[in-house]
Length: 165
Figure 1: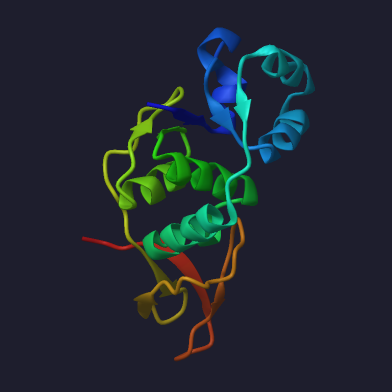
Figure 2 (figure 1 turned 90 degrees about the vertical axis):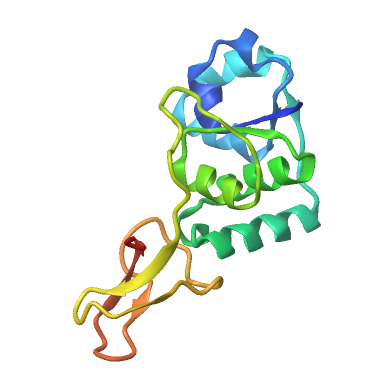
């Protein structure tokens, strides 16, 4: 079975272990930003650089929206997820949000360095003021941190939190 490698694998695995893996072209820029020296090693590895189809990209966004993880996934994460979905491959990542989304979609995960997540999570919006909760809409604004909107009841910031229970 094919393996789609997240950037964590590119950063931490020896080039021999990367051989035969599939990666998104957007990962090259991310790798260059994080470790220019490592980029040269990775370029020498036998990696298949592949762009996901438009339909796979839409499927990835839909899956991430359904799991509640889309708001906190980067564009590179969505590219990697789309490749894994399109190829029905094992997703190699330490990113718990990617793991959560791919597991929601029925995919198999392999960890890079850290232990894989033990649970599949559901996310919700929770008000910082009145603590009101609501389901996380698929089109919630994407940001790495902080509030993603305002509470309809009290106007306080809404944050993405893991559902209890």
